[in-house]
Picture 1 (cartoon, rainbow, N blue to C red):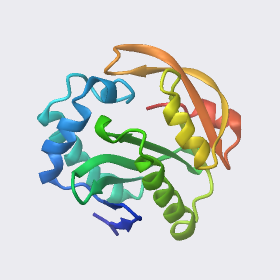
Picture 2 (picture 1 turned 180 degrees about the vertical axis):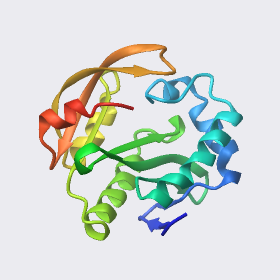
Picture 3 (picture 1 turned 45 degrees about the vertical axis):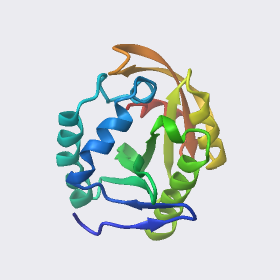
Length: 185
């Protein structure tokens, strides 16, 4: 991995994922309510899915096109993930997921804010986009707390859902029309 980072917040440590994280990742995403809100995750989500994903993560770090960090909690280990993915026109898509047992406690906002702060200060990244399936308004509240503004709705395919569903797109420092065009999970 090229220049892996470790970020610390008040309650969490964010670090690059490691092969031994696969069982906890599979367990957390393996809950239908979690997989349902992700674009690329299948359901059921198996250990082999986590292992395959972990094999691909280092490529993004090496190529400086994706920065993925697991969200770790001192007592519970890996509880989620947050990452940035480079899109066309130097726009960075932020995405995240959190195990269902930790929903509603501010963990994903805390973790995503740390990644946004790092990206803005250390990488001078200023153009972001993101989104969520329309039936997951909690994710929209996270994005609003991070300073994103909603900019429209699109249809996105969700692998666990097996179909396209309405999704709300958000922008921070990116032209709203571009954020809509870049919509992809």
